Image (cartoon, rainbow, N blue to C red):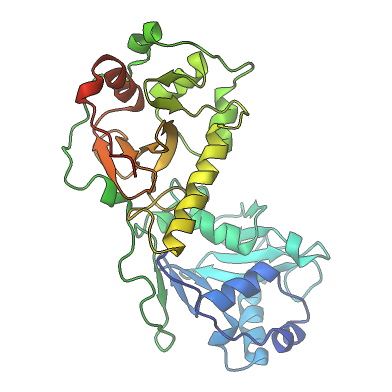
Length: 346
C-alpha cells in the first residue's frame, strides 16, 4: 500500500518482551521487522523497539504514554496493570493507540483509540496491522482518524531520520494509470438497466440481499451494477459475462480474489498490470469476464463523477478504457459491438 518492501529490521524479541513483562502480538513483531521507525501518513507513528537504545528504554517509552492515559476518566486499568490498556502507537500528540490486554492470548487483543479529545474511547476488534491497514484505506473505516486516512493519497510511510532505506519500488503502480489520457466526461446514460432488460436472459439470484453484498464488499459499488445483479443475476451479453454474488464457481468475490492473486503472481514473474488492482489503492475492481480470458473492471481512480470501464486482456498488460458505466458498456456491446474496442487477446 505504501510502495515498500519489508526492511528486515532486527528486533531483539526476547529482551524486549522480558523488559515489558508481556509477550507482544506476532503481527506487531512482524510490523516492527518490516518497517523501520517512521510515520504513516505523516501522523501515525508506531512505538518501535528499534527507536530505543535498549529494551529498558523501550519499556520506559511505553510506560510514559501509559502515564499520559492513567489520569483520564475513561482509562480504567493501564499498563503495567494486568488486563489494562497498553500503548503501541500514537497519532500526532494524541490519540494514543492501545491494546486492551484482558485476554491471556496477545493474538486476541483488540485496539482501543484513547484520548481523542472526548471520553468516548473506541474499541476496534482488529490486530495492530489490521488497524493500520484500515487507517490507510479509503473510504475511512476509523471515523476519528479520517483526517489521517485522507492526509496523503496514495498513502505513504516515511522513515525517521537515521532509519532511511533505499527506495524499494522506483516505478510504483498507481490507479491513475488506467485513466490517464482519457476523456473527462462519462457517456450517458450511466444507468442502462432498463434498456438491457429486453436483451438479457435473466438468472435472478434467490434471496439476493443488496446490503449483504455491499457489506461483504465493504464499500459502495455503482448503483447501475447493483440494480443489474439484483434483477438479472449473472447475465451474459456477447463475449461478456457479469460476475454476480451467487455462490457459483464464477461468483463475484471468488473472481475478485483470483484477480488480485493472479496480478501478484504475474508481477513476481516480471509482468502483470502496470496500474493498481483491488485491494491496492484506487485499484481496478473486477465485475465481469471476457470469453477470451480478459477482464472487465471499474477504475475507481476516476475523478469525473463515475467509474469508467477498463477492458483488460488476460496478461493484465493490454487494456482499453471506456468512459461509460458497466451497464452502458454492456448496452453498447449488445447493440453496437463493432464500435466497442476490446484489447486483443493476450
